[in-house]
Amino acid sequence: MSQRYKVVIEYDGTDFAGFQVQPHQRTVESVLTKVVNQIAKNPQPAIQVFGSGRTDAGVHAHGQVIHFDLPKPIPAPNLRLALNSMFPLDMAVMSVEEVDDTFHARFSTHGKRYRYIVSNTPFVDPFKRNYTGHYKYPLNLDRMQTASRDLIGEHDFTSFVASGSQAKSNIRMIYDVQVHERPEDHEFVFDFYGSGFLYNQVRIMVALLLQIGNGRRPVNDIPRVMAAKDREEARETAPASGLYLESVLYDKHVSDENNN
Image (cartoon, rainbow, N blue to C red; front, side, top):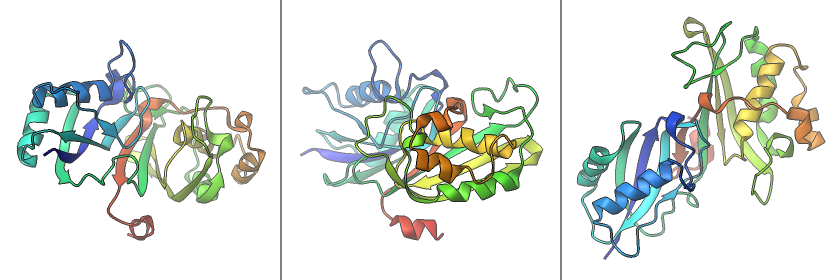
């Protein structure tokens, strides 16, 4: 009898062409599928790996969740060791858990947390270029914190979704947004917690908040941009290098998690 596994992984997205399988490209999903099938001794039909969602090329993850079924069960600790021994150095398994077949990495989610890190220096730091976005202009933390509150709640985020989105609806719920500064590192950190996010939504929201932080937009501009339902009102997209999928939530209600 087969066994389903919930696996939490982290990866450096720099050298991946995103999560989803693409022809002739190195992707997270293609590496996962190859390794899982090797561990299972290449059964027929091949084992399929399911992710909680896609990340784009260059986007990183600390808490991506996948699931798959093995035809012959392996104890969870042994499976974690096997996966990590076969993964490339830019991927690692954080945890492995046996779950029942009602669990689905994508459809069982309650919410997701994303983090975006901006390096606020005059020039690009060569040691941060793959792991932060870069914004060379002065930023006002208070302005960005005030503006970020307008993103919280259930809204139509049509103005904040890139072309190519396959979502049936652009309405999403954002439970919390936090913006803070790390002066010692010359960085600003944006944390977003919501039920789910549209294609490039986080990166577009960050780009708009940076414009507000620099005074290029009024601090109360977000409601106007939302009401327009027009991508042209929020045209810029922050680089993929600063974005991290921090965690995917399943076991707790989002309202409980938001109150912690």
